[in-house]
Image (cartoon, rainbow, N blue to C red; front, side):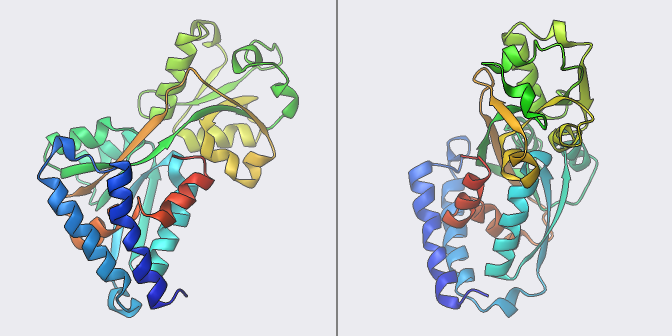
Length: 280
């Protein structure tokens, strides 16, 4: 258990990170800057408060599937430092967005894109968004023999590769990015007979790690797991970084704690965890 001093001092990093990285997107809602600074200052106070004060507090968070591993560590660290319990639901970004549209009572939404949080802001579900991570798409295989080609494009031309998994481009931003890279490389049409749609990026990696498929388009974060480290992968320069945004519901059951968690996503401790999983 961390002591009171370390919890209080950790809060000092929030304002500094905001100023340096301009992570909070105040350009779309200038009035939000004042609110964000107040939340950051409030967080510093919370981190100096005895844990038992927040022992019964909890929040519900909808989390994009690519962020599962990093999120679990971040949530555990947040809970240890604040005493606030974090309950998570993992799925594709599109699926979570649809759940929210249909009334799912999430307090915070961690998307794998900027589009859905922006839509939720326009629709009145949230008052603003933050960029909490930037991820990358890779091509991964459990069979290291399939990574002997010079590039990812050359690897996909190997006749031994019969099945290639990809998260559904219609609901998963990582899948959409993989599709765009394939189209840019001129490979999309030729691979149609070999592409296997997964529900989300986590399932895409699962298919490859269990060798149900030969290769899969995954998030770079997958390589931080023991399974991911046991395989091989290619970076995909043609795939743009995945800019991931988060937002807090205006009607969150525990809005103060939800806003604290949203702010915690960009603190030094969370940043260290994200970097371990390949996020910027």
